[in-house]
Image (cartoon, rainbow, N blue to C red):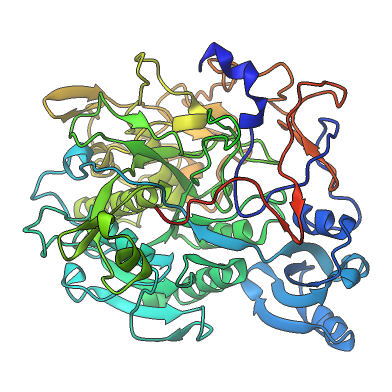
Length: 588
C-alpha cells in the first residue's frame, strides 16, 4: 500500500445505508452490554428515537414460544419466525427494547436491516476467456444454484432451467411466476448460468448448463429486509431434498452492526453451510472513502463476514482475457471484518463491466439505456457480479468432481472454498506488487484451475490420508501466459504453508466453521509466523491482530488507540432515525 496510508485514517471504514454516530471512543473491543442490542439500535435509543422498530430477536434454545407469549402480552406484532436460527422478526416500540432485552428468553436483538444489491458504475470486460474456460468446457450440468436477489425473469438465456421461483417480498415465500422488477437478480443469474443463445454464445455465463431457483427478496428499487433473506435461506435449507440446491448466491448485504456470532443473517448462512450448501456472498462496494477518495478498509458487508461463506470482491479485467493487466476494483470492499477482525474477502473475481441477461421490463434496463447491450443484455459492475462468477465456478467444480468420482460424496463447502483459494491467481497493482490479503484474499478465481484440482480429489479416501489421484500442475495457461496458482488456503488468522489441499483433512469434510480451532494433520503446517498485513502500512492508531481495528461502545465509534489523538477521523452523523454515511451504489 502507498506510504500515504497514514494520512487517510478516515478510509478505514465502510460506507452503507446505515453507519454509526460520530464521536470519539477508546480503541477497545466493542461492548454489547447487558442490553443485548446491536450497535444501530443502541445508537438509536441514545439519540432519543421513539418510533417502532422492526427487529430480529434471537432466543435461547426452545425460547420462541415463551417470547411469543411475552410479545403478545405487550401488544407487539410477531412478523415471522426463523426457526433455523431460533429467532423471530417482530415490531417493537423503541422504548420497549431495553426492557425486552432483559427477558430471559432473549439472546440478542438486531435491527431488521435493509439489504442492498452490490453493483457499481460499469465498464466493459470479458469473462469466459479470463477464467480459462474453453467453449466446450463443463457447463455445471446437474448442479442447482439458488439466486437470492431481486428476482429472475424468464428468458431464452435460461432455456427452461428455472426449477422454481419464490417471492418473499409480497407472498411470504409462496411460489409465483418468475419476475424481476429491478433487474439485478436476472443479470446475476445470467452470469452464473446464461447460455448466450441471444448473442451467438458471446455472452454465455460461467455454468450455462446449471439449473436455477429464484428467490425474490429485493424490491423494484433493489432493496429489501434482512428477515426476508433469512426466510429464503431457511426455506432453501429445509427443503434441500426437494429443491436439490447445491449453491446459494447472495449478491447483497447490509452494514455490520454486531459480531458475527450474534448477527442473524450470518447465523442463517452458517446453518446453510452446515447443511452442505456452498454459500457465495459479495463483499460489498465500499472500498473507497467518500471523504478522501482513497482506499478504505473494513468495508465488508454482512453476510460476507460469515466465516464459512465464500466472500468475493471484484476485479477489473480491462476487456482482455489476460490476467497480468487485471486490477482489484477500487470500490471492492476490503477486510478485515468489523467487530471480529477476520481476514476477508476470501477471493476476488471478474466483476467489472460484465454483460449478461437483462430483464427487459425492469427498472435497471428501462432507466439506464446506456447500460444496454443489444436488446437482451445489460452491462453491470460490482462485487455482486463477482460473486455470481464464483457461484458459476462452484457449479463447474461440483460437476467436475462428480463426473470423475460419481460414487463419492459431493465435495463439502469448506473443501470447495479451499480448492478455489488454492488454485487462485495472484493479482498485482500497477507497480507489479501483489495486493494485500485484505484486498484480494487468496487471489482471483481461476475456474479452469479449480476444475483441475476438483477432478483429482478422491473424497472417498479416509481422513488424514492423501486424496489426490495425481500430481497437480500448479499453474494455468491463459492468453498464452503461464500463471502460477496461489497455492494458499487462508484459515482464520493463518495461511497454509504446506500441502493443505493434498490431504482429506477433517476441515474439508465435516461441519466445521471455517477458521475454527481444529487439530490439523501432521503434514499440514499453518503459518503461525505469518503476520497479517505485513505489507500494509497501517496508521499508528490502527489495532490489528488479536484486537479490533476500532471501537464502539454503542454511543461512539472511532479508529485509533487514544481518544485524545486529534488526527482521529470518525464516522457519519446521525440524521433523524437513519444513520448515514456516503453514497449507496445501488444502481449505476
